[in-house]
Image 1: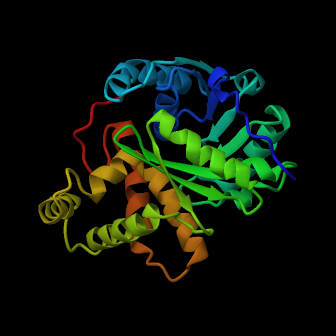
Image 2: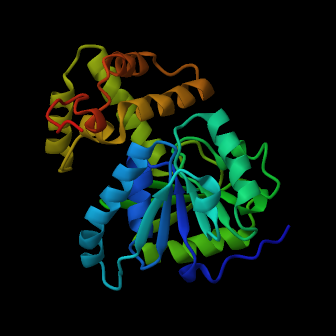
Length: 289
């Protein structure tokens, strides 16, 4: 079915569904082009924190990019209200397939007919979310990394995405200060994350085997690559629960992957040490929230 892209997008809101670490960062970038952004989350404290984050960070993001303008951000726990007249909906809920299937069914029913429905999933292809979707031609992956510092976005078809949607998203996203790259065939982990997954998994295995500490791995990584941080700092930023969800998905596809990395992650999670968002993870020097 041919899909008519929302050419009037500049006058319509964008919506982020899920106000966690990445959801609020996506909302920040979408709010940096002068338009309206709505954040949806069922948890009042989470959506309030997300709205506050965008409000606080937006002036610096706008100041750093020529042509950027501060938009308007709001949050709600009412999905129908959030989706009203939206041109783009970015799903950023936890990496659990049954949940994403339910969410995309709701989005397809409630969003405007020309709204583009995108998933920020870091490990699942949007093809897997179509079970309850009647209009798969408007569904795709737009996987953001860690904006505003890491502004690449993987753009991948669901296999049924209208080519006009792909071209439109690739054309429009740069106006929000991000850099889209097309994934030209279905790929678990998309482009960069496939490469990152190998680095992350081997780093976890080295620590799980007792070969080195997280701090030593990060220190050597920084010395040898010149990077400002290492794999364990980055995992703490993402959230160790999210990292584990992703690793479980990879392991389901490839049972030959070592168990050590997932076992190590579970040990930290069992202690409530999820990284930056809980004040401690592989490092314990984060402010308590």
